[in-house]
Image (cartoon, rainbow, N blue to C red):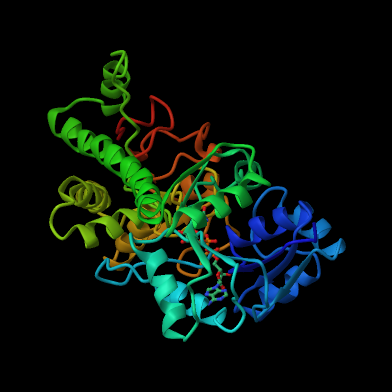
Length: 407
Ligand SMILES: NC(=O)c1ccc[n+]([C@@H]2O[C@H](COP(=O)([O-])OP(=O)(O)OC[C@H]3O[C@@H](n4cnc5c(N)ncnc54)[C@H](O)[C@@H]3O)[C@@H](O)[C@H]2O)c1
């Protein structure tokens, strides 16, 4: 059998690992990105994103000649679209990148090709992809369209791309079958077949499930504070019930998946996605609640000490031990406090610098500040010595001592 050619559109956290994996599996891969510097970096066998083992995969893919990056697509047997799907200001999904990526392949697709959407998308987007090609006057009657959502965990992408179960949903039965068979050539997890709309909704459902469950924990944390109860102890005790598994609260919910994708359901649900919408609101409200808690503590401090309080925001990333600030509630909280006139320093050990904050070493920040606000449970924060007299507020689980307010 001749070497199959795959054209991967979008070479970010999903597209580049997929392209390099396929190239290492023997496919001839043409990777496409609109950013010239990304293309140049990859063609040198290097990477522009941080992900363990990706450098080795890309280097060997490029050295073997099986991976070439370009700013333009080319003819291929299989097209994979992995471009961003953000939302607009009013939480309406933005599928412009998908439409534009689809248009870019219109002069290259031909009968018998498979066109796969990997971007997390609102229900119906795979159909829109086909319609977009029709609008470009492509006869799509012999082209196969499918959605195959990604569910990898950043930091473990190269492993999970292969090991995770995958859901494949085509717009026709034959599209589903052909696409699933393609994934079976490089995935060791089970490849589950369905239709395109169910596959699209499955991905949104997975992230909404997480969001709703974190919202429950976040709501409990607000109620526990009101009732004078330690939320961490409360959850630990409740979780001893054999069928209860409450997640951990935090200062909100972030990242470009869980904080974004549920809105795709809310938007399409037109009033019927009540729990999913409320969960989004509860998780966003938790960040506002944290802002107010810190501001009240600052007022108290300044009344007692007759001087301006310095606040250290410990952590800016959206979860522990990563450098990702996308949709991060911790970053939002630090920005809000600063915008409201507080004297704020930040500590984010996973980044070198930040344009808006003095990013201090944890020890220095603690010495310099009056109020220490733990927003993210980074490992660097676990055994810090904090002298008596400092005010500590913790909105993440570091340890029992810091989960309680101490003045
Ligand atoms: N990163 C994750 O952990 C993850 C997990 C599951 C699902 N997803 C989903 O996968 C999709 C891609 O996410 P990502 O994290 O890889 O995004 P990303 O921003 O890292 O990468 C997307 C790339 O697409 C490029 N691009 C944009 N428009 C293009 C076009 N028209 N033609 C060619 N290239 C184009 C961008 O320059 C960028 O390099 C999103 O829908 C996301 O929600 C991501």
